[in-house]
Amino acid sequence: MSALARLQREFMAGLAGEEAGAIAIHRGNVRSARHDALAATYPVVRRLVGDAFFRALALRYGEAHPSRSGDLHLYGEALAAFVADDPFARALPYLADVARLEWACHEALHAADAPPLDALALARVPPGRQHAIRFLLHPSVRLLACGHPVAALREANQPERDGTPDRTEGADRVCVWRDASGVRVRRMEPHAWEFVRALAAGASLGEAIEGFADGGPLLARLGAEGIIAGFTPGEAPA
Amino acid sequence: MGASALAAGAGIGLRAPHYGEVARTRPPLAFLEVHSENFFGDGGPALAVLEGLRADYALSFHGVGLSLGSADPLDERHLLRLAALVRRFEPALVSEHLSWSSFGGIHANDLLPLPRTREAVDHAAGRIARVQDRLKRRILVENVSCYLELGEPALAEWEFVDAVVRRAGCALLLDVNNIHVNAANLGFDARAWLASVDPALVAEYHLAGHERGERGLVDTHAAPVAPEVWALFREAVARIGPRPALIERDACIPPLQELLAEAAQAEAILEASRERAEAPA
Picture 1: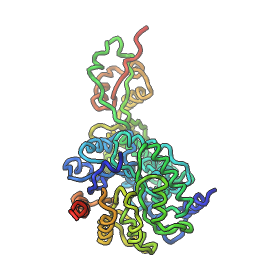
Picture 2: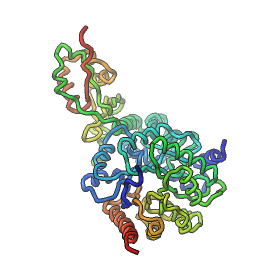
Picture 3: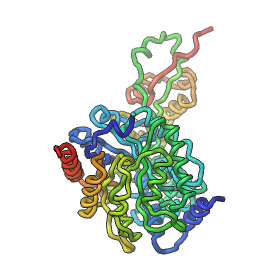
Picture 4: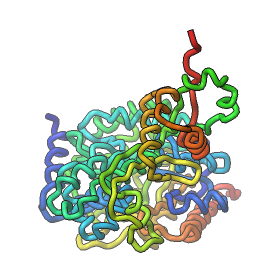
């Protein structure tokens, strides 16, 4: 090991330790960088637990899952799993699901752009070929099934709200995506959510729509909202 | 290509709270500098804002996460993202810090000082040269703030910085506040630093605020530029010449007008220097 590597190894160990002195300035920088990155990604978790608890949570998380990139946007992915196992956070059983939702929102915010669905091209697909269409979801789409009413919790904890959720019970199936206005979070009926999930898995329209009396209105809504962003016509009949 | 494409005027560090106002009001500035890593996403609103501004402003990409001086291997993902960003936006300047941030795969996400040894000069210069090869352009490296000595220094800070910049064939981003902070903390004369700088190597200035902590000055980027740093900047410009100069604020971000007022102050100092240079002898 080079002298440089040895010095850097010792210094990193010192940052993780408790030694006082000038190194404490850097230790403070490390902790605040990690805390601030988590606070930017998890504003609802932070509001639910309060600033002091969140600061302590960020410190524990940072020790268990230190940053592995110079790009702090990649930091914090494991917070939901960490919170689920954290003895202090377990008192709020819905916290891990809220963290999952906020990470999905974070990913959606930075996902690739895509042009809107070409509705005219879609209308030109002959009726006999429609079942073979494969829809492409917007790259920002994330689908979550949560055991708690996460959509209501997130909504109630936006800055202008007082934190009282409209619902305190129930399991939410949620679709997260980004449109021109920003990140959107939509609670979906189970059949609609399963439909989008089937599309995400690459099912053709014919396969995904099985069991629907009339899938037309749902499809139109998904297209208009930008959840569906494109399609491939599928194979021609042999 | 690179530094020569940008006028020696004042710019500001553009941070998220000001995206909307800058896009709407288009304040007159020589350039906008952003943290490269804030645009490493695949898409989304931040990149859209930058696309909207590039026609009206020269851009400078200032990296905080490449960990140039680390003994770890260069982070290939990070470098790929940076290269893609540089290809897409063709910024006037690309800069990083002459520091390290990571070891053993763990990131401090802080700018840590290098030991001022010949070994560190060789190591950092080699890595900067590789980054320049990958980006196919010259980059700038910034002198960082120091609160402690890592190891036994063999070189003065200005000797260390000069040696790295020459060896790597890069340019120097002279952070005037960091010189002031380090002079106070490590006990040297800031003027000696300035007097030793080869003007031909300097391609940009940074101006930021610091605060007084328990153990000396702390480079927080959370306050206006201090009067002593303005004085040092005047001396730097008089000796080195006008270069693009950046007002940098990363915490306690004030209303945009306050940053623009500081940029105007920097612009006036650069302007006076240009006039002196143009005046007949």
